[in-house]
Image 1: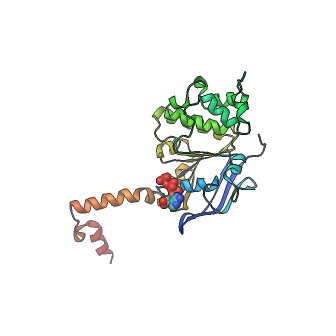
Image 2: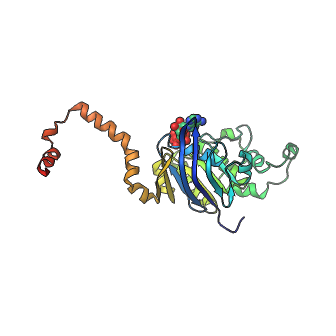
Image 3: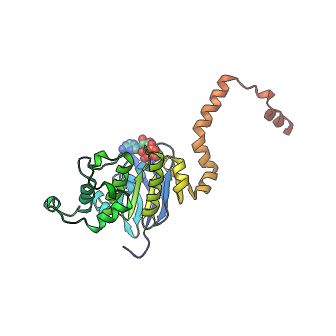
Length: 274
Ligand SMILES: Nc1ncnc2c1ncn2[C@@H]1O[C@H](COP(=O)(O)OP(=O)(O)OP(=O)(O)O)[C@@H](O)[C@H]1O
């Protein structure tokens, strides 16, 4: 493990699809141990930004992991540098056991024969990871039989055995029960202590409970950034999140009883002000 703290530093990152700017000049720095949540309305560019970091979307600007530039590198090179991600739907091997899934992830450099050979002991990193993600009691179960939450934990475990230093997690608690959410939050705190973690999430309660810091994306740009309290107090964030609901409500109110502008107190006040 490195002695110096890791960090992920994005500078003026842009991703364009056919002239449409999905990510439009994002700069942000995420430090190891600072559990960062990336939030924003649908289409804000969150997933595209994660795609850019992992090499799946062509980006311009700079994305550095420590002093290493990631832009321009191939997907598997970026993964090998220690940048790991999960997807909204867990991508575990359903027919294989929990242990086999972790083994395959850990042995990404080993040949298939080594993996097939009967083993007498579980590698230390796999054993440790089973404890960390809370699946020690389920080593022999087929991944397909796990609950949705447990599959997500297994996927995070697969990143841990690969020694991922950066974890980019796409909606890890979507579809989870309340208890699984709590356990996932605790897991993120544990793994995030000595790793650089970015959590893309729509669940605001989960974000409020577990985020150390928050970046709010809107229309491909950083709208706001700071602590949960700072971001929540930001007028622009409230407008983006409440905007749609407020507009719908206002329209409904207008349809129900058209307000007469002359009679409202506000209109009367404005008259006096003149
Ligand atoms: N491959 C693509 N080609 C064209 N447009 C794309 C592509 N991928 C994403 N987009 C567009 O880029 C914008 C950002 O999408 P993205 O999925 O990154 O948003 P998001 O913040 O992750 O949204 P959600 O919360 O709904 O997942 C959207 O308008 C989307 O339609």
